Length: 352
Image (cartoon, rainbow, N blue to C red; front, top):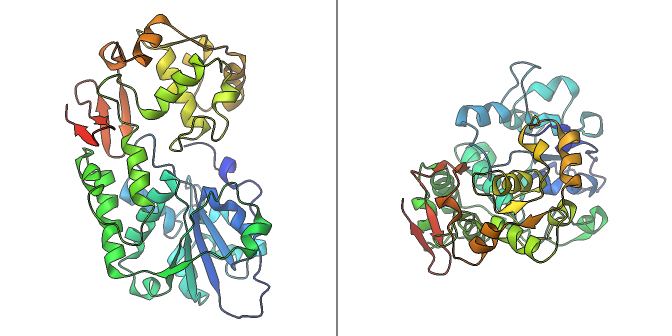
């Protein structure tokens, strides 16, 4: 996981200045950090986990993240992204407390869930609903906001005034979240593919998010996921600089962030049969945590497609027939021997 300060730098926690004495907490993803400046709650808690790449955190790890902090040397804790001095609901000694304990200790009346349609945010939503469903004292205080816009791009002053539809959360919604989170954590993507044919109630953005996630499985024709394909298409179109490719929205896909796009690009460039030429070779040996040197190497790169890359993009070659893969998709470890594929046109999962 990237350094915590990349998510939390600059976060502020405002005191609700409204006349009402109702105590509100907002739970959101890292996309919703601007809500901390929108003056809509007494405490805003952005969750930092990326569930769309790498191995999923264990249930014990996630429970520790939300629970009481046993040691100040713990890697991450929910309170790390909350500025204590601006919040009337959490005092400095209480930063070690669990999220639910803080909400109960300070008499929180309402807990709002603000998660936009972006796939990682939707995964965080089903995770937190699954976590909270067994806490009756909390579930009755929960409200789901229908955030049908990009939270990351929203201006805090706009968020302060914006009317966002609110729903109560029923037992059936908790059950859908439990089922979906269990499906994503499963060792194969079969249960996730099955979600596309089921009604998902108030979790209306979960199905499009799952479609986007399934599209990142290798294609039966090219062996590439949707974002890898868009990288090749953009490079073929003359966009040879990584700052153009990594700019938010540049690829028209929404699953991976800039850090994750870099890893995908390296996979396309450094295999036995590269599809991309011109990526700085130092990236293959640099420490993954050396952000400064890696960013400089990406900026130095001037990219083009190899002849093989052109053939893959045209559907004449299968990238995975010539290159290894060891990548996580939720709880599924994709390897050449266990390579699940997704046929987007037929909405069909292809087993190894």
